[in-house]
Structure formats: C-alpha cells, structure tokens
Length: 334
Length: 67
Image 1 (cartoon, helix red, strand yellow):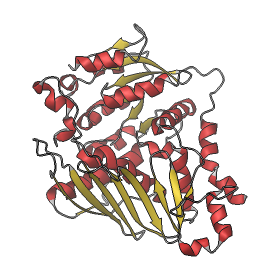
Image 2 (cartoon, rainbow over the protein chains, first blue to last red):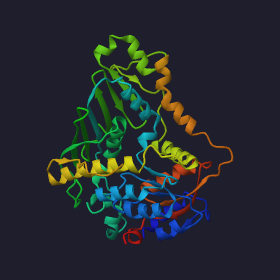
Image 3 (tube, rainbow over the protein chains, first blue to last red):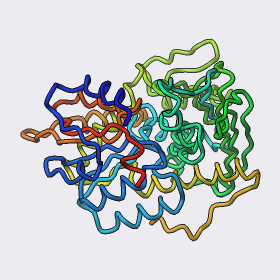
Image 4 (cartoon, each protein chain N blue to C red):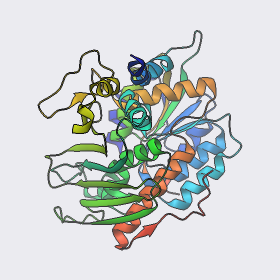
C-alpha cells in the first residue's frame, strides 16, 4: 500500500466525508457510488474497468483505454447492450473548445488538404517519480516498465493520436516506429526517445508523433499542415498560419479566424481563440456529468477509445519489434 | 459573419453543456487511483460541487488489484 498517496488524497476531501477502500471490488459494490473514475496504471485498466462495467455503474476510464488490443476489444464487447451506462475515456481534447474549433476548421476545409501532422511531447528529465523506498520502485515508476506501461506513446502521444482519429473519423493503417533508451540508462525498459510514423492511406496523410526525455525546447507541439494553412496548438491555445496563397484572398482568412479584427503575430499567425481555455479535464468531466444526466454516448466512448488504444498498441509493436505493423481489419469495434 | 458563427460554435456548444439542470443532484463518484492523475482529478472535481460529490477513494495499491 502506498500510504503517502492516501495521505495526499485525503487532504483533498473533507475529513470523514469519503469512505476509504483497500479493495476496489468493495468500492464497486458500494450502493451509494453512482460513478467511478479509474486512474490506475495502464496495465490495471482492463481488470478494474471490466468489473465496473459489469456492476452497471458509470465509468470514467483514463487514457489509454487498455494495455492490450484484446482487452480493448473485450471492453467493446462488454459494453454491448448497455446503453443506459456511460463509459467515457479520458481523451479530453474531444471536449476542449479550442480543439473542437480546430476540428471544425479542418472539417470545413479551411486548412485545405491536410497531408502531414507533426506532434511532440518532449521533456528534459527522467520522467521518474521520487521513490521513498527501493521496494516501491516498480509500483511508483510503473511507466518505466513494459509489464505495466505503454511508455511515452500511451501516456502522452495517445492524446494527439486520438485527436487525429476524431477529426478525420479514421485510424492509422500502417505503423512505422523507431526509438531507444538513449538518455537515461537507469534500468528502465520503456524507451525515452521515440518516433512513431503513422500512415492514413485513405486520407493521404502522414502523422509524425514523437516524444523524448532529452530536450525540452519544443515541449508540447502539435501542428496540422494543409494546403491552405497550418494550425499550431498548445494544450490551451492555438494559432492559425495561412499559406501565402490564402492571404491573397482576404475574405477567406477573415472567415476562417472569425475575428472582427485580424491580429497577426510576427510569424504571420493569428489566434484561433481570443483566450486560453481551461484545463481539458474540466471540460471532460463537465461533459461526463451531462452524459450521465441525459443518458447519452460521450464523444470519447468505448468505440473511439478502442480505436485509439489499438493505434497506440500497434505503434508500440512497431517500436519494440522494429517491424512495420498494419491495422487488422478483423478488429470488431462497431 | 457567417463563418464567425461557425467558428464560435465550439465555445457555445461547451457553454451550453455546462448548464446545470435545475434540481439535479451531484453525481456520487468514487476515485480508484490516487497517484498524480487521481489527485489531479480530485482537485478538478472539488471545483465542480454542483456536478460531483466524491464519496469513495481507493489509493493505488498494486497488490489489491493485480489479482
């Protein structure tokens, strides 16, 4: 038991206002509980989520939805016929006003034909948590071990992979990847330097998804590049950079930005929204509440969650096997 | 102007969704996992008292779940 974690969590609630459990099955059986948030290490997602689904309670399941492909397909199967039960997966860009607007811009053709996506999620640090006792190394730093984690792709890049799946209502077909433990040779198993190249042949689109622990200059980067312009996103704000040929058509640019007065930065970009958005989790939980209230399917649901989980797993398969992997069309997602 | 409406659609939609239904009770919710992500989520939920009330907690314990 990680007692210090419980101590930290208890500081966030009024004393005596919550029950503390040591067995998740007893928590699930508590008739007072209407909905359950599962935020455990990735390899445990399936076991806990499956039991929550069987209990009939609403479930908010953190991303990536599952550790393995067969588990993703099994959760899809378990949710069959459970239309009164909400399962929302924690891919929160689907609820962000900024990312929602970018999806609209792309779907309306304002970027023209999108052929490349560049994503990064970089840091200059070992991605470790402090360990008070060596015996707790694997429990605390589970992200370092393949047995428990999908590494940088599952923990970070899955958000951007999911966004592209959502915008284009698709998934990658071909998976190329390379990487290694190139900076922190500290006993970890998951790579600290990864590059996934995903191909969406029906769209003529290449997605470049990279993350590393050895340089923080780019930090978070998400660029979507079309024949008419580029969208460059942070998690809470974004810019639109029209191509030169679009600038010649002033009216079109006015329409794309929607601003009453276009403000350009030195690089020739204009903000997509006038203000930064809130933390994406807030929007996601707001929608979770509404979906429970109105008994509706969330935008980030078991089907989309499975599609993204499988995309991540195939990316990781390509990464660790050093082979090109392909989407298997026999996956039954619905 | 036509496109202005379209492009603010994302914001408007999300604002509409945030409207609390009159008389609706907060959802009683439990959190399984109290690591960085779990406690971050609890902080967010604490800021949404009209929508959620945390009633249960399970700190992450590998041994209790791995079976």
